[in-house]
Length: 90
Image 1 (cartoon, rainbow, N blue to C red):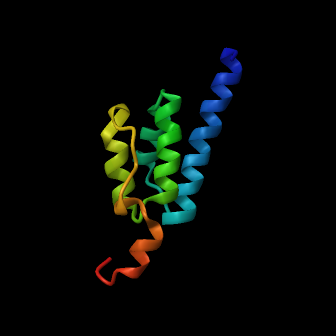
Image 2: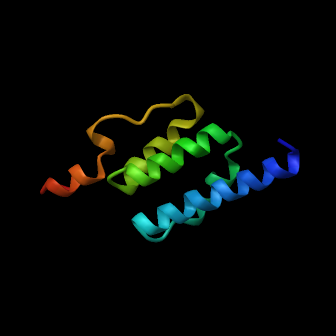
């Protein structure tokens, strides 16, 4: 992939991630947006897009974002957005 195409892909993935967060959780703080724009691994961005789409809460997303590049799996009940609707304690 050419550098210009790669740069465009990073921008698009970052904007997609921010859009998903806004759709699911409302306002996104400028600090979180700044951290998203610091991400420079396409695999990390792709993983966080999946996390944003499946995390039951904004807090879970933030925990995963802080996990950094070392985290690569999103599994378990923690990532079942429908399951959280059935719990009364959320």
